[in-house]
Image (cartoon, rainbow, N blue to C red; front, side, top):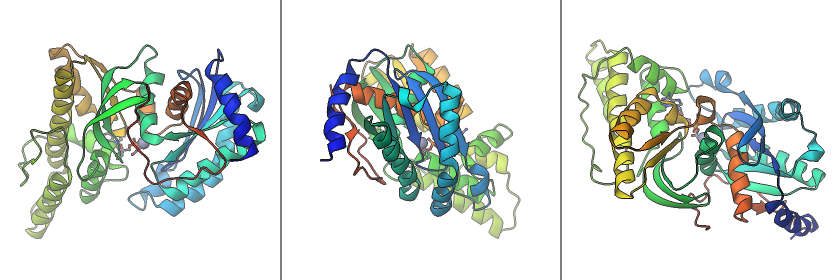
Length: 358
Ligand code: KG4
Ligand code: ZN
């Protein structure tokens, strides 16, 4: 244990009872370099996002090595901008939070090392945050009055799950994907249709111009469970497209996008509502990039209205990766006395999903 860490244990304890807490957070798990400053876990003073989407477009997806190099190039400027926009001096910060996983190791390491340097030089605690917990917390910075308990539908590029959120740091897993994450499936289908990265928003846009008139050769095996499986559907769409190409038949990208999206959004929305009813919770909270999908939002809105369930989803810019959500999660970690890290913190490709602190 370092001397720094021994001192930080005391500071962390002190911060738990301090009235106003300013956390600077860093997110670099994939292709966005983001730094935010958030007051008391809810009030976003700045949330700067430097996206690399244009850089990765020509490769059809995120290239890990290219992502880490570009995080290195961007991070210092993003830091300066975050402080300037918040109107805060580094010395006024109470803690540094950082995404340490899940994500691309090389990309995460840039954020983790930057965070360690800041925490040590400012002599303030370092809080290691799980990226998925950040996605849940994106709702706390979007809806200032939102409090647990609720059911969370987690739909990102890396995760697909239904969670019962009992408290800020107490989650139960109700169901999850047994293979691909839903965002991954959107991106792969988009790729086979020749659409640019990231595929999800392009499928969403084109689906509006198409009809739900294609029956893919696929049957969902997990209908009666809260688990999901998307790899069979993805293969069915890929086979459909390849078949048509071999026969030199025309395909309608819009109809494929629409028919695919209908299946996925039915599955996600129906299971999420079923969980709310089974667990007697009248709040449903959506988290993760696929939460930006307009058809998913439409279906959830209708189903929630029919079942008297309040629906929350992050405001659009907090749906996808951003550091604001990481600071919010860190604030609640701190209140629950978890997440304090020493300077040997390292990046992890996978981190535990579930928390059970009361
Ligand atoms: O949560 P996120 O920003 O990153 C991860 O933590 O994975 O999610 C990114 C995923 C990508 O797969 C992207 O295609 C998808 O979210 N996405 C969408 C939409 N906007 C982003 N998927 C469907 N419809 C959208 N409108
Ligand atoms: Zn994410």
